[in-house]
Length: 425
Image (cartoon, rainbow, N blue to C red):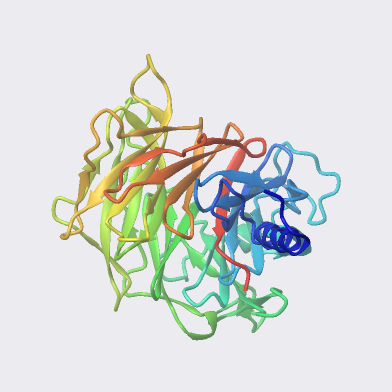
């Protein structure tokens, strides 16, 4: 049957609108944008996430420069208009064309149509070796974690630190809602070193911190030098205040990550080195008044064999009843692989292996580093050191399965962390 001229025009308009919304006959439209860091070439791979299949397609002009050397952490400001990348500095990638140079830095990007990133400017944290970043609960402040505080001073006058402690630090920035520009927030409780009369430019934490977790009005850093956690209460105007206890024992032998999810805090532990151990997961509840970590009776749970070397975890947001743990290796030397272990979070906050015989733990790409959930809470993705992204679909019972059209996507070399935004307001 032939279409009339009006019919053909109407059909063309429908197709045009569908394409503008990112829809196809085989997909359900774009529900989010993903950005994956890679240290090999100091790049950011960008993807659009398909609603119907979870499939990833490259954003135009991807990959983008990371702005600095050795990108390791990425944060999206709520609303999706701005993205911040923490560049650890150093690394083996090319230095040419990096506007922030090869020292540690924070790169700001604006997000345009179809998730295209446009570099804006560089910022510096107040320590050395920045490794992690996080938003506060309002999205008005950005926290940047440095492994060594400014000037690497060892100081016994700070609460919770001995004269032999060279501590790490958090730099706090306020975020301009219109430009995304970062402005340093001074520590109003502590004076700077050297009788300058000025306020300190950072907030001290424990030795060799590697990661932060924000839970409501509390912030926690994981300090790997002494297996501790430093707690801060988040105050007004971006101020951080030490609680009654300046450090908590993490309970881990080799702590590798700390994340907040649901009403809990979860720490992954790789276990004793060279013991071919699956490691464990340590769940805690948070004492909101004091930002304390409260142990749970029967809380620590062994990882699911043969998974080993857990490095990251995630609580799915739809029901907050499932915890996924990312593992870089296995105790099975005859069939080495990386995987995701899945647990059910019980009503008493303890963890139980999710029932999915023969499948749990679930195989992912080699050397996974980070994990994120899509905005519709249908899919979970891992960024893998082999330069790929693995996607999995989440069932109503929490089991994971491969995406309908393949679960492996090429990102950028030596991928580190990833971030996902659902929209751009």
